[in-house]
Image 1 (cartoon, rainbow, N blue to C red):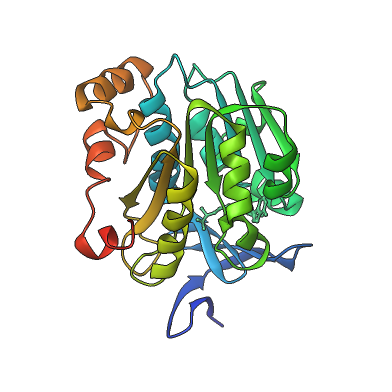
Image 2 (image 1 turned 45 degrees about the vertical axis):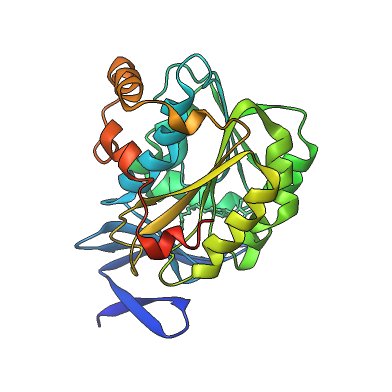
Length: 284
Ligand code: SAM
């Protein structure tokens, strides 16, 4: 019998993906985890009824979360990176493509996500977990940023939605912890959901950023498996000039890095910050 796995994120709208084969389904210590195959999207991971990634389109989100901050910093300054969440290893894979990165710490609350991703989604991390520059810590991201003595040039928050274990990753306390753990100049990137479906999600983050960081902005990606319009990523920095790095400089850095990208280009990097009116209104 055909099994359809429903996304249950939105109260008034549901979509479902056909599961041709379920590889794993269980309640972890923190959330419900299912990994299955779908003919169109490839291998799909969902947590608590929300698509986290599919192997056919994850490159979009993972490239844009990683390369926008790191090419803005440039090789001289992009050396130490902290990832909160991201237990599938996709962001870490892209971050470690930057030869300038000397250390990359990934803090995910759920060991099962990391272990099951290694087992069933090896093409996502592509060996990043075994890179000598990488360290994986199983802990709550809030506690980690509050307590660490380390300082990072970029912090990338690749979290689940602001319900369940990730709710704390959208709070003032967490963002203040991130601000404290950033070098200067430093950049924080967070995921902020679908502005059309969840306007308060982006508005709330931007309001908090406005009182904590010198600079803030929203940029957009088109992610086929995040149904409901463009997907928002948020930028915060303690340096107001970083976001203004000229296009030709970004292009020079991208070319010099030799990093092959499929969605990210220097033009897309710049253009992603151009917002439709309804998103700009949430991003004040
Ligand atoms: N790209 C995905 C998205 O936007 O839907 C996110 C992928 S990643 C798998 C999300 C990770 O955030 C999960 O592995 C989850 O365990 C982790 N996470 C949730 N709450 C967390 C917390 N408080 N501290 C650290 N990691 C957390």
